[in-house]
Length: 115
Length: 114
Image (cartoon, rainbow over all chains, first blue to last red; front, side, top):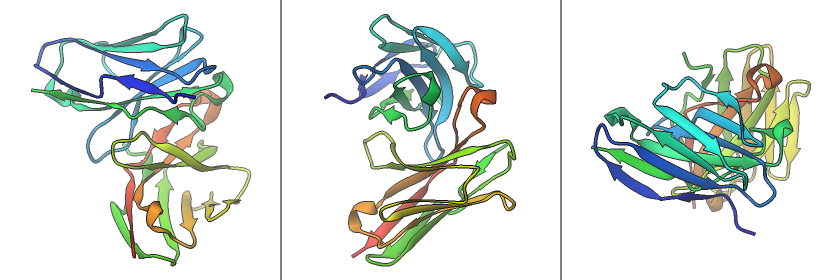
């Protein structure tokens, strides 16, 4: 069984551009969460989706948005990129909303560099 | 405002000895705590968790201790093995109130010396 897959693995963008990151959860998992991990810090919660509905949002500006598709895959979109958006973006999946973040399974992440 | 703190950025331990990783928190509403392990170029992997109604949880070589009065938890690994070399994150949740969001520490890099 495939684990959580994220694409692309690495990405370089210019300030002001837009980026879309993609995540496919483990088969059968209906919940997807997104995290931002800046170098030297722990992951920071961005969004949580369950059954295509937003279930939680962290303290991030409106430039960050996400959605979940009928097949439970998810996209994270970031507009008007800033240098400070450079980070590892992690996606995590879990079975249902009773264990949204506990024992979640993480992908390998997308390394975004904004120049 | 760091609600979950891992004050040791790194820790070096001899193979076969005990590794003790520490974590402090400030939010008394946290009721569930987890440890994740992360290897380079991989996502974090769940290791062990503990509910606030317990003070100890054990899983093989890994034991987590929770001291609620001190708002402190620790992860003990015994005996330490070379494959345990990784970054360890402590995370906490106050459950339904925050929609099960996890608040993470900055991580401690554990190095097991042969």
